[in-house]
Length: 344
Image 1 (cartoon, rainbow, N blue to C red):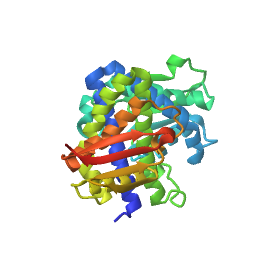
Image 2: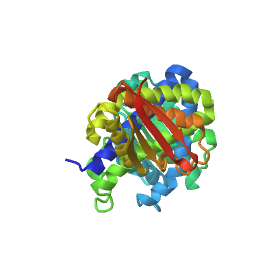
Image 3: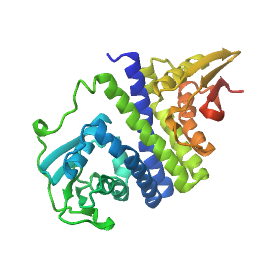
Image 4: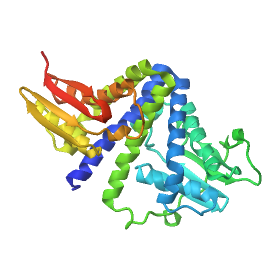
């Protein structure tokens, strides 16, 4: 059985993974495909710019041919994030990736409600930009299948062309092509000594938290504070309710009472990497978090982003004990205080 630290990482991963999925569905259903695709594009482009080149170093992929390095990055980094991906290398200039159902980002039945415009936004934001960041304008991505079109996976290949590509040539679609079979014996592997189980569990947590952070920030930048609170906040409350039980089981917290919910917040906060404590104050429980690791380095984070994110815990409390309410105060420097108190 995993230890308490690992179960904490798993609880955080459950909540933030579901929130990413929920935000996409909420955007599609409440704002439409165009707004959803815009927020998803901005999210994945920001992630690509921040993570791709440092990730090549962490995964030991520097110096490989561009197509191979790009494809192996997606294979290995997504494996660390719990995403099922297959890798097929044809040559130094052509390497395939296939994201196999069940798709991580379209968890469960979500895939039925996501238009292909959202998938195209992901590919345009990330896969089509790898050559740009590598300084290899000859590198492009060819998409051959999309799960959101009803295909058995998102599939395509990196191809290093014989000439530089214009920006609108870096992503193209070739639905008639079919990728080779995946052979696990020929696929790259992570070094178990470098990536022990504890580090992998932490990477899974970070993967989900990073996407949730970026999507919230880009939702606010693209659609403004009102939409952030309305769409992002409602989705957060629903996810908090929907996934409270699973997170509580991982955190070893039983439902009911202010003290137990304070412990739920403390254990989840610590699992997120934050300094979190709780104390009794009469009939109330006050939880204090001196850091906000999720938004560390993000600059001046708007109140709308905080309000939307906080609805995760409002939703969770409504399942933990419907006779309690949650009040949150965000202080300067990232400190947060929650008061768990009886409804009056």
